Length: 305
Image 1: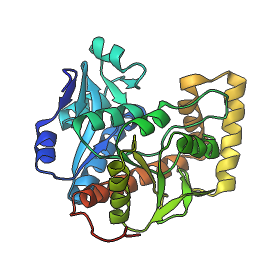
Image 2: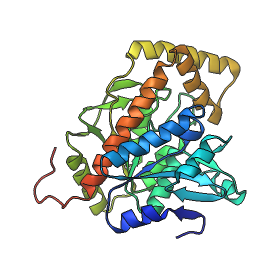
Image 3: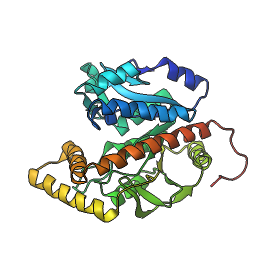
């Protein structure tokens, strides 16, 4: 194991015992909510996973170490600090500087795969933006790391159709949980059909096993629509206004996503934040069930759909 990766003893023990483990990102702590609500959310997500019989492993960069299974003390320090955001392009530099940071989807997947964790729960993945050549590192990470990632679809500010197409090009299987259309993050569902749907976690686990057995690279993306989201036309109105303001202000690159999400929250009077919190909890819950399903004996028959 690389020196810069630190896996907590309880995670090592759980993996050695073939217990279900779920990785969690930490940018929701460092860049999602103000203190102390960000710490409360981190504890809530870990509790959701424990309640369903799995072990949570929050990933973070802490004083120059990529940590898998951050402690409560670690999370408290991270939540109360002005931490940076660790993506794959700057991870090495942050570690060399001895910095602390929240981990993005891509970085969390890298750490989970390195530690041997197969399941990861997040909110929404990054993807293809409306602006040319602006794409998230999440997409290539999904094609690279053998991790089952549970999300509520690509973030609402993205070109979701182009994101789904790019995932197909990269060979990333996208499956729906009790839904035949791609989840829409703040909106329950988009109009984009998915190639496969499963009604039970055991079916998704079986599909992921087959994917791995075939020697196919990368992971699998699970689209889990939020139980209650915004109406499409309402969100579209907020998004158009936020994009207009971003264009006028010259906001682009890595500053664009936080700007747009922040404006959506303001324009909706906090309703997008409420939806975001709901889907995070629901994704953590499903991820725990998937992690448990992966530990079950392999079925002898066809996939359970």
